[in-house]
Length: 49
Image (cartoon, rainbow, N blue to C red; front, side, top):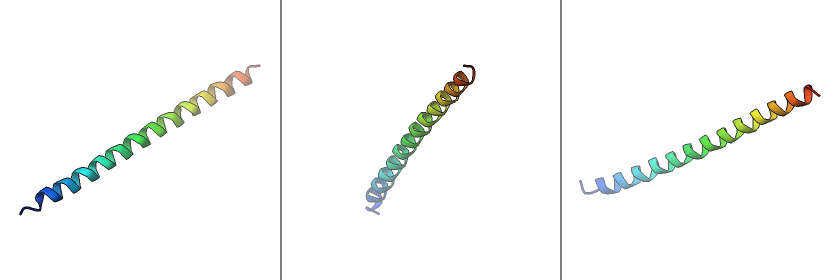
């Protein structure tokens, strides 16, 4: 079963890709949340004028 190294490397590379994709998605959602909060604050300030 010498192919286990190939299997392991394939799996490791895919897991690494998925982790990077999840990190990117997390960052995008955090930035989206921050922009939404800033927009809400801006709207509240404009309502008080």
